[in-house]
Image (cartoon, rainbow over all chains, first blue to last red):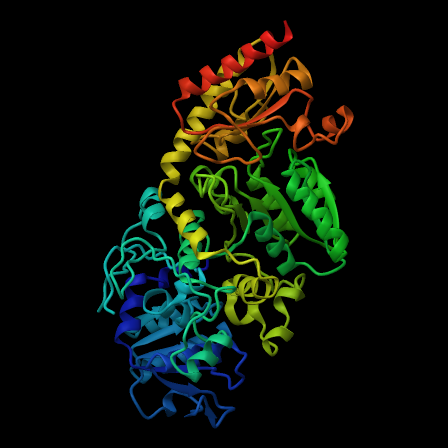
Length: 159
Length: 436
């Protein structure tokens, strides 16, 4: 086991999805075919403020891109990471230093060291989960494409 | 916060068979799943339309590719199988052809069980000729047979949970290990078991295909199929450029890289279903959803009735052999205990001592069993392959297919089992009367 399952708590995921306003996406690519771009586009479409963190870009998805988390001049609720696992511990330390609310590591971004740093620093941590898919599972419309949301409920949603 | 969806409980199979995939429709509160009888969907604005077509947002565009009623069925079935999602098709054969079409390229090789349903064998041979894909059929009973048939260009293993007419039970865990060693997916047709009796993905299968026409629909009303994906297979392992490489049909989108474990299903829907077009109708999806609600209850009765009928036939001198895998003498009994503890399905064959003529007389003699070419109906069904589905074959060719001149196939329904046994007994009596 990678231990990633310790950082996939459904309650935590839903609390973050509902309460977060600002998401900094570390490694957000301007290439609209990359997964990070799909996630950034989707998050912005669903009302989150998306802040690109990518030293190689001036602007992504119409938003100013910052070279690092520390350079972002506003509070960040979720730091969403599309980087190689080896880069995560340093990103986690930075996330703690700037007082971010949560560290969210995308599919395949598995770093137990990074997760420990963030959790010790008081951040919520989600690992090996996609922000877009989790949003679509609980709030969005993943079910319209026949995906299993694992949601079982007889309650009527607000229209 | 909205806590409606907290998965704070692992709901049971019966509960999920009724609720999964079907939250009440928010606009009207309709409790039954509405039949969305529409070809197309109005977009909110041009940006939304673009996002749907770019696969950047989950939304409806056209019912050849997705439909809310069909999606509810897909989610419920994938939930019951333990998969991450499913794509429904117009038939079981359309589903398995699409599953293979999505992962294969010309020059690839597939290893399949020699005991597959005849329609599947015919389809595989046809696909093989048309798409230049090589095929090897193996005796499915030994995992080693599968291992030995694998070549460098092999891209998939294809088997059935329960075969017919032999009642072969696949050693799913062992064959899945063979597939894993070769970095290729194991595809299992779970039509005869349904997810109530066996969930192949829990034993390592990567993809499950269904003819939902059978026990899932359960009432012989509609034709349909589905592909369910575990999401666990690594399509980026270098063997599947056709799945992993940038797709010319989507401006260079790399499905597996972008969508991770969901990439294969996205490609199956957004490319294969879109382009081949064998979509399930919403009306049929509604009927299959109704079927799934009672699947656990029906499968319990189907399996119990079938086992009682098999044991009754097994003791008679006008019956030479009964090929039900749960019988004491069956070579598959150990596999039944492992993979099918709740019952070995409801379709099995037996052989009449009197051969071809006895088979036809027996068919004439029964009253409750419907003489037709289907299985998995609530009604009991019967067919004599030598005079119907396989009538062009001589006795030698029949033997090669595992069918004798006196072989009868039953799909045991959920009637009173005593009535079924009465019916079979008077059918057997009829053979004697016609003989004298």
